[in-house]
Image (tube, rainbow, N blue to C red):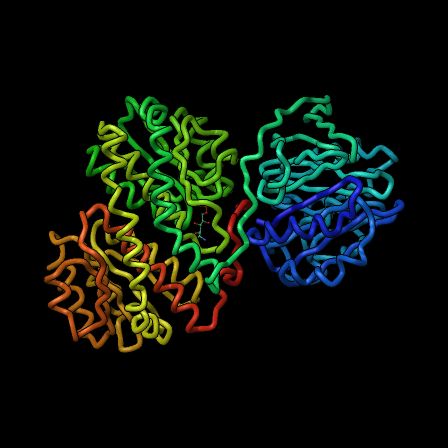
Length: 587
Ligand code: M6R
């Protein structure tokens, strides 16, 4: 949530910060701002809108030190006033996270002060101003001690030619240059720095052009490891695609290929970590959770091991039962989702072995895991997860095979057909147009399937509502008659996923139940009998025949394209859906 960039050196800060914010826009895009420091004077520009709203002001912002922010609103709606930086006296700050005790602090220290914004963040600037007696470091430490909740904040002070960072439960990174230093919430903003340091909770870092000093919670100077920056710049090129979402759907086959190859190098470690596992709990949020639902089927079928799935935001507050030999698999594209990271930390505290499945090495999630199964989807800019979902399915399929005792080479080979088949689904995506048109006109869209198709139905529904704003639900096809059928009428569309010959007849019956209630329906299938039965009666999206357990890779590409096309028909921005951000680092 929200992106932070900071700079101090010999160059003009504003342009550098602006470039970094463009790289972090996926973290939030409802307002943006930059503060720079020139000759002991702070200048601030902040506006409601995407980062590009700042562009006309960059030339006018002088100074060689500064901070910037791109926001996803938590407290206070998107507006110029609520945009960061927030300033008080000699200070300007940008903040990611949530200050849970901001009302309390405001009441205690500023009962009569009218704040300029509705944010929880402004309190940081106000407190710094209150406790500053000429000692910047002391003020930072004093304020950090008062804050409850999660934060990564970058601060400039009119008296100090540099910037500072404080952090707890939100990522903060330092990047090193020659005669200049950088700060950011995420590595992609600093991809040009060869070396970075990931700060630890409680750290206070002070950056000048000449160096970086880091202090721990007790304000003792500490040395934190410098690591080679794993980030490559986000490729902001769209090529011939009008949107990142389409570009990233087209990259699904490459995501599968890279992820399955990468598995060969971790299989040993993963195998050792999973040895002795008797029970698996899979956790994650949103799309990552949905990939866990498919993984449950993979593991139960291949390894005959009991698996539970838990939404991370629930798991972390439910006093989970961790028995000996329980492995918790935490799935997260970003590796920074607060609920997932906290769920993994809790599992670890309770004695579970934790395996992270993530696209982000060196994320908070990987740092608390016993083993990491890499998802090599490459950077995903569109808020809607597409190629990362399929990458997660790849990693989880292979992990399930390891749990089943199958060698990696054989398992990796068993996925060799997936990428070419996905390519076919994506290339033939035009067949989805009629269905997209139906969905765009519908009052509600239901995605239905049995067994493994149910998992993809959940993801299809999430994708559609996320980027088209059409109300949607994913449901087990067999459950339709136990309640949801009451919602079916001529304005609703039911999309049936039918890939298992075993269950095809049962799901086909559910299609008939919808049609006989005058509901609209469509079928996504690779079962010949289903295709023949419904041809000419409802739109039939045909996907290639494949092993039942490879079908989610293909149906996923189909429902992703369906959501994309529906969003376009409704004139939505599929890359930046309203109210959302790519990485949710707050509760
Ligand atoms: O980075 P994560 O995988 O942990 O993110 C979890 C969810 O926020 C994410 O999958 C979200 O549901 C997607 N935007 C859905 O497309």
